[in-house]
Length: 241
Ligand SMILES: *Cc1c(COP(=O)(O)O)cnc(C)c1O
Image (cartoon, rainbow, N blue to C red):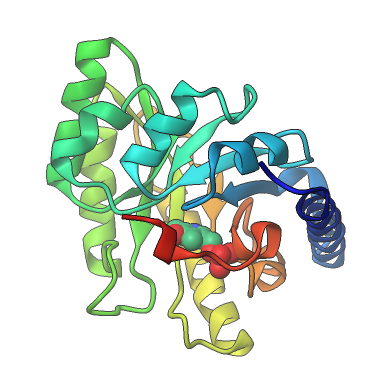
């Protein structure tokens, strides 16, 4: 059960985020409709997600395959798309392909091969983003800038994969100025990628910006922001196995 208070907090939070998103878009001379709100709902229950699905959220993002399966089986997104935004292990690809409208976190040719094969078996084309390790952090997933173009080239060569754009998570300790620089680099990389005119690619998605930095991301061209804490409150990992 979720309480009335919790529902009100979620409603108010989403309204405020939407207003700030629209302001940031307009300030950058952009149409607010061009920025989607992805609720990053890792660790949230089916009930919480189902309630939030009636709010002006465009889509949901999951980090764990098990949660994607559980919440899609329960129809918790209320017909809205679910994206996979976490690190995807190759042995779990089969559960995600066809179920996630977009896999945002592709960062290796091994993963591309598995996704292409799984999509071929289902006779679907899987939309993907390539995740870039924009801060070149040893601990983070994502390709580095050198690995990006070879990876895009192999993705474009796969019949059952469609490239939709790029995703990144800048270093957690970056201040607003540093984060904006990373976001600007992402916009430039997407422009360079589009200049290659890859086969079948439709790279119009730039997924960047979280609870603490989404207005900066929108100022630099984000078309999809992934927000968890600012919608649902702080995560409680102690409840999870
Ligand atoms: C958890 C998560 C988010 C949201 O982070 P918050 O700081 O809670 O808004 C965004 N993107 C990814 C990939 C995440 O794992």
